[in-house]
Length: 280
Image (cartoon, rainbow, N blue to C red; front, side, top):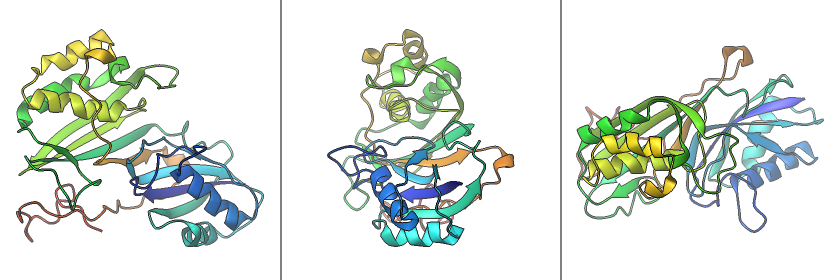
């Protein structure tokens, strides 16, 4: 049978999603836990690979097994064997035609950025950081050039193995509350480092190093060497993977990690703004 799982994880202790021979990965610890529950080797396929230090609020995976277990066993049994930074949120039996990666029709990401002269300590690894003042409106103007279907070669890592650099960015939003910025991206699929580079480009514009139209020229150039440096993985979250209703996958509310308010400017009237002050 084929089982789909929803996973959340803190990316800080891991070298990334993908199994590696000499480093700990999310895939490795998940496969080890599932193999323990199944009493047989289990290999998982993920909706998307995440880099070292990148978090996931709603990663989706699937695996095939001959072991017959209650769905609750795949959740509770796996969580008993997983490190505390990884948790299985739900399990669902799916048809063999379901594929966690190829059946997905969009992925969305959030990036949370602290804009402050001094680097964070308590939020280290959960928020990104930029020390120069940023201008929201110019970042929005620049980021809007990314919308639509483009060749994103200027936003992909040199080691990217995707068959084509052409992707479609359905939505981009940048919001600000005080010294905190939230970047939101929704795309059919993304290239290696594409999201981190889509954060770095508007930040370069917002800091005054380029005008907004530079991002359009960067896209047209298809030249990674002309782009801003790849932004840090801290603060990046795989937020949602979208599937057609026919797969009948659970819809689980996002469980944000605990993030501390800056300068005490979050009060009871604004604590429901989850991007500004995510809480469990």
